[in-house]
Amino acid sequence: MEKVEFIEFEKELLEALKTDNNVLSRHMIYHSLIDESYKLRDEDPKYLEKCIHYCKEDIEALPEFIKEYRKEWGEATLPDILSLERLAIIYDKMGLTKEAIDVCNRGIELGFDHRWEWYNNKYGAKKGLKVRLMKLEQKLIKHIKK
Image (cartoon, rainbow, N blue to C red; front, side, top):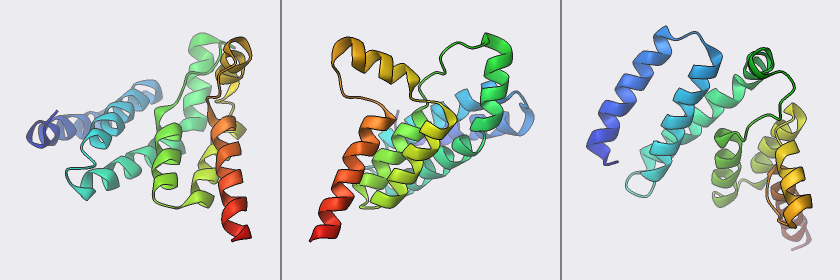
């Protein structure tokens, strides 16, 4: 998506956020805004700022998202949440390791890492919030030792 297309796309989705009170669909709107603004981050810093803003908005609504998700799908494993992963990555790349750690901890606290535990155990992979958290903590320790 080009910048011109994003402007119209963003306008439509922000309008939808004004009228849509369903927390599950609001999450999907934020997911789209986060994904598309992140893709444009290298073209203009304002898109990275928008991405950070939309991540924070989505993360703030996650407790309500969990309630609605549980009503809809019971005890099914919570889905991956782009805003948590993306904001942790952004903060890490900005050198804001403590903030990235806080994002990972929030996601883990809310229960958004169980799916990755299963995947990592089954396939020997190293993905998810807990793995990212471990890497960030190691990075912070190395920085403190310097």
